[in-house]
Image 1 (cartoon, rainbow, N blue to C red):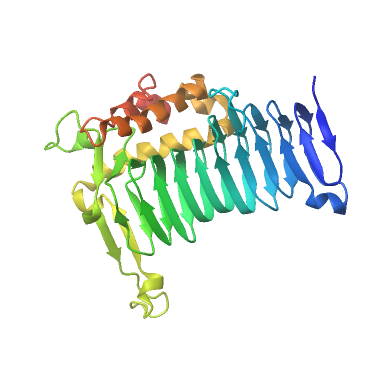
Image 2: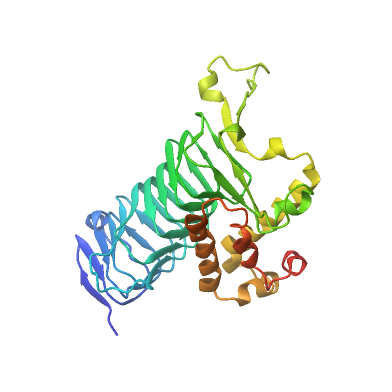
Length: 330
């Protein structure tokens, strides 16, 4: 069995099973960098300066805190595509979280707290909190909350709140709204996916329609009153919000709430499932996590192939086809 290959005051290299956490034992080790090689299995957390992960088949069981950047890369073309990197708890870095040139998927089972985020081929089961973020070819089941600019392309996210947003092609929301302090200009329509078809409650919609597409006409300015005087703020640019929302189109609010309550419950089960007692999980978590993720990726990639067809959202309903709605929510 392989264990740590190098450990000193400047670096900590792991290539196999590591029992316990990687923590500084003295002041000089607070600036120590950690390097995880393919096959690393950390049965604890990591506290380091910079953290580098090289290649697939790496798992970290507890929280990660890096003073510098966290980077995930794969320089070896021989590594298999079906490998993965898994962070089982939250990742925090005031610097940057970067995923580059990785054929394999990176899985975050909790929240991310980062300065700059630039990820691709990743799935996040929690929320993202960042100063700025670039998200490509990824799935984020929670929300993305940015102090600065958010760029999204070829991705599925829960919702977002940001200073400014650049929305590219093939972007889907699991919640029917998103917020920005600056005007949201959509380069392409945004899909609103539902685990339970919103169109079921709209008699005028074709039976096979499963998604709503939001365009620039669905961006609405919200005039926020001053908290002290009850009137509009003089600095409207800093206080007003722009909302990308389906609400203006929906007259039957009861049906609207019912449908997206289902979305909320499903994402809650996905993001918090490993913390639930077995009795609370129902049939949903009898299915392997890899199968659930595969269906989500199929849903995301189907947009690239069909690009706005009326039935492209069907597969997200199929994701939980074998799990009865009432049984899961009871």
